[in-house]
Image 1 (cartoon, rainbow, N blue to C red):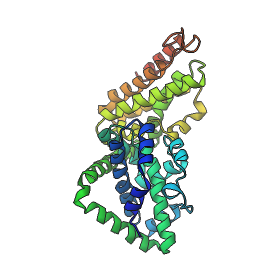
Image 2 (image 1 turned 180 degrees about the horizontal axis):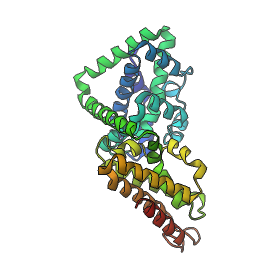
Image 3 (image 1 turned 180 degrees about the vertical axis):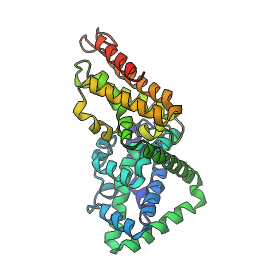
Image 4 (image 1 turned 135 degrees about the vertical axis):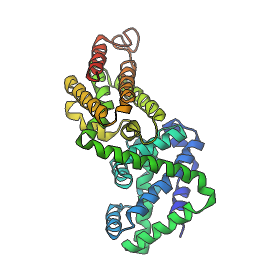
Length: 333
């Protein structure tokens, strides 16, 4: 039976790599590097989880029961691409469970190294690899101890292969960033959720200032995402920016402010609370945090013209959007 790494590698054919490159705006070389790093990153986390009897039992319960289809049950190529940027609820949940609170910093480290947003790739790879592990468990009727042995054996073989040195350097740097970020996140306590949600709050505060159509809203989200990822690329590994925003605009952050999405005052209060938390806990990163929130607000405001018809006429930034930007700035004062 082929090993887990080999099975994943053989399942991801050139067609998939090409489709991923188009979806993520990266060349095939970068996509292949990202996929090469994703496998040992996730496998290493599974191996660590399974190193204790309790962890191995928990991992077994996490494994999907449906192991058919492309990439260990992830679905068709069409569904793979359509779910790519959210990772799908399954992908997001698995990433958080496997990689822990430093998941965004881990993704941010790889994004910085490879030059494109790697988080969607990790969100795809997690259920794919878990599906392959589940298939091995079901085929060989593995118990928790035998699962732990399988994962340890596969991981040791991969990490001990000199051909994988460059890949493991990327993985080790990403995991170190994740560990550092997890420590920082823990120091924030309940305030961390506000810090992580601040970029989405800035996006919503500006976007909801005018009654944009769906196409303008899509442009605003894409512009905000691009601004956020650009900011995190420049952030040091394990920094607050990387820990909070390395995954880009996430579903979790969106969910956390959904109830106040059209209440500009509530959104800017959240930004004010987040700014105060960063000032208290990470004063050395305060200006970088503020600059990131500003860039998201500005990118959102300038993403589409307001007024006019089909983009003809109108203004790049409306009076309402300027008011929203001013309110965000005041919240960070």
